[in-house]
Length: 384
Ligand code: GLA
Image 1 (tube, rainbow, N blue to C red):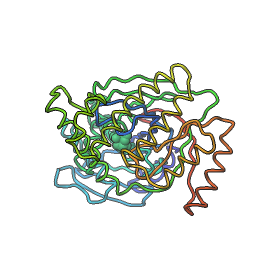
Image 2 (image 1 turned 90 degrees about the vertical axis):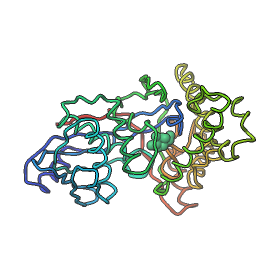
Image 3 (image 1 turned 45 degrees about the vertical axis):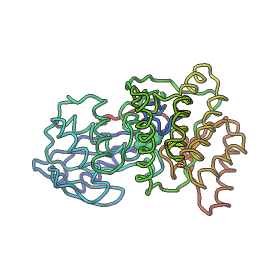
Image 4 (image 1 turned 60 degrees about the horizontal axis):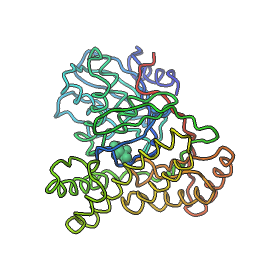
């Protein structure tokens, strides 16, 4: 997206003056799904698509916000009771509130924003929105005194406190810390992270968007999280050191099989296996062993579909087509219930796979899937 696109609308919508322009990306995740809130590992990277916003302090105590894509305008104050009803505006409001809670003296501003990361496609458009404003408010009102990890937490707290999703830290971390050409392995317990240059010779990372929106997903997401916490609570009784599922071995899990519900047990089983898969994929990557990487991706899909139950018919179908076409690795990406599969595809297979998946998806579901080639980009930044 070009700065001019946002700037021209900002000028037109407000008083003709320009402000500062910020952007933050959406993300992909190679492997490590639903592991972040379990203290495990994730392996995301930022993409070259996201949200861009222009902002100018307006000398009042009101935020005047314009969504270019939705052609929608909302005004709100900065006190807790001023929360707007419009869902996109709640993200911006939440970020303002969380920055204020951290001592930043946020004042009124005019802002217009637009995005090129698809909404509800599991690429974290909401984290991109949060990170854009967290980064911007820190720069405009906070002398950049809030560090990058805390900016990511501002976005996460916005989800928890203003949007009703008890998410982990992966999306906001990726959006803030992203680096062109690199994936990142984050240990969500210690918050240690490492950049992994990702340029697999002879392969492409491709997203296939099922165009199923995961709008109903927040309550199901929170429920998955509760299941994990139930199992931890049970295990704590005999293993007081256990803080997260990260600390639980398969043997320990087996000890509570008859005590926890069958559903909670399946959820925990998936998470424990998935945390291990991230480590296995890191080892495989270090050896250039993409076959193993791909195999682990298929295992993740199975786990998310059968044990964690966050897939859907469309995503399972996309996964099957990838397998039939000989794609190296494929799985549902992100929280689930819709959105994209992420596919590791040999270059020579790329065009066959893309045309096959388009054709078969349309035949079976009567909908057109969308294909995005993944380009790993930079994290939150000021542009002008
Ligand atoms: C959503 C959440 C993340 C993470 C993923 C699943 O994207 O926002 O914190 O839990 O789902 O891996």
